[in-house]
Picture 1: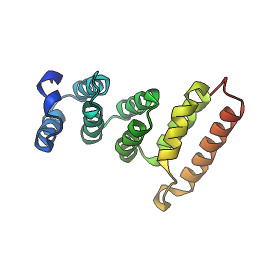
Picture 2 (picture 1 turned 135 degrees about the vertical axis):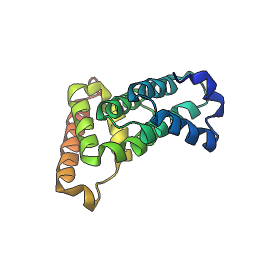
Picture 3 (picture 1 turned 120 degrees about the vertical axis):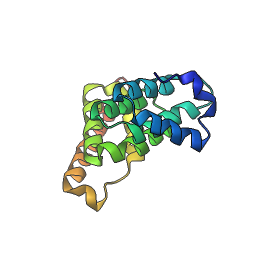
Picture 4 (picture 1 turned 90 degrees about the vertical axis):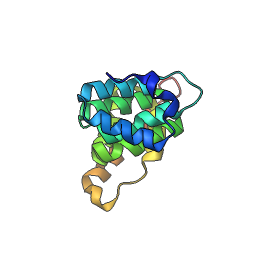
Length: 157
């Protein structure tokens, strides 16, 4: 079992991070996800454990459910830089179209998440040519959903 206390003070060392990622890939994915969750929840004024958790999620997690849960946790933080770092790490694993769909679903089901979803939309940027027309349409739907929620006034945002 991975123990957070053994690594938390060494997360700034790239050699330690690479060794930890190798070790995590040889363990059950559920255990890795739990360890990453602990890093994301680590109470510290130093944000290094959270950033390390995101990097490890990108390197070690394969199940979409886990990556989606991490994106949701990042949105709950409503911190611009953390949402940006989260997108940087989950977007390559989930894909642009899928992430836009998750953001749209989030804003439609929880209008109080407008700030975090708006930040994610800002950091998401525009789709590339490789993302395709489907991604462009999905992005328009997200923009419309955000506009609708935000134009309803501050009581819903």
